[in-house]
Length: 257
Image 1 (cartoon, helix red, strand yellow):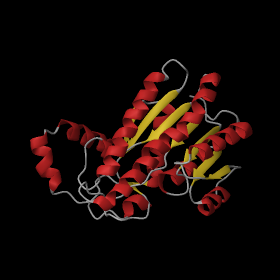
Image 2: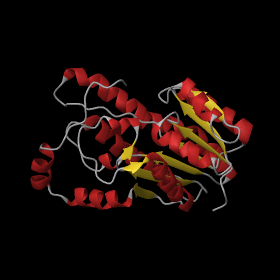
Image 3: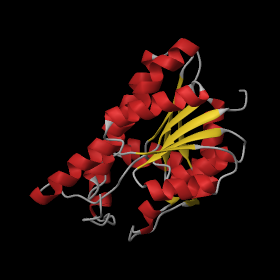
Image 4: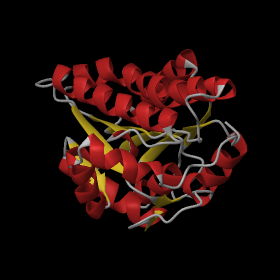
């Protein structure tokens, strides 16, 4: 695959998004960086090599993303890669009425936000006959994790949405890549009160994800060890999965969404 010339990334102000921005900026590409926190975006862009464009927005705002996509295309042409990375995580309990608002917000960001990010680029990429659309899902989308029902189900929905897009766009020249991270050292995971096996620094994870994207893999788990865990989770029968995970550590509730 030829080197990328331009890349558009959501959730770029911190965590995996900022790490991906750093990785791609160091290869000389022009970036479109979108996130809610405009000040952090501006600081990030100022500290990256090259000239980049920032878009302070919330991925739940479809018109804002459509406008950002149009502006970036006008400035840089159809991007080589679009990465729908924005996501939030919060502990939720199915029986708690107060958690319903959190469930709604998680789905709005993790599922609708993904669709809002990728949709404006589909037709321009189709006309160009090239491009890669990337969605950052999660290993948590493989099985329903107790205490993280909103996050797990939103990432399962993201995986299914990306798979549908991949098949729909087959033959168009557009590749659709699903990346399911395991544990990555980011602000999102910093508050998890349990052991996180095979956790990777964000910059290492970003380099591995960029390698997956460059290969055009349809689906990949990062790090590779968590791919084995994911396969085992798929195979576990309910009679074994249920008692094992009933005792698992729970994600903290009540985080700022």
